Length: 136
Image (cartoon, rainbow, N blue to C red; front, top):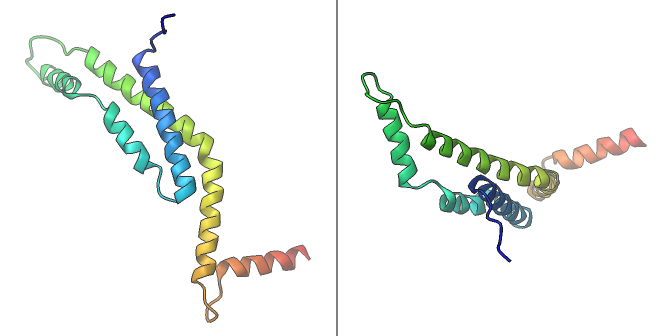
């Protein structure tokens, strides 16, 4: 059986999806940004010097007085790379957003309660008191 090769943009989107999902899981567990895990993934997938040189050459070729029109292949490849990165990251982050939001709110509440002392009114405790009075 031969494996069906995935096109580059699909492979990039899938890789970024997995990288972002792992980064979000790391953020959920440890509370640090998911970008800590995501940035190395992006660096590994980033376009090489060949694409960068082609894009710079196309900019130079589009200057006034240039003999030939700029090639669009490098620009299209760069665009597809950016779109595939964005799609993979956005889908994974969208799936994790509710859990990360709840976890961040719980951490913020725990921090506010821990930092409050008897001399100051903790906003979280005050909100609980007000909510209890309104409900009761």
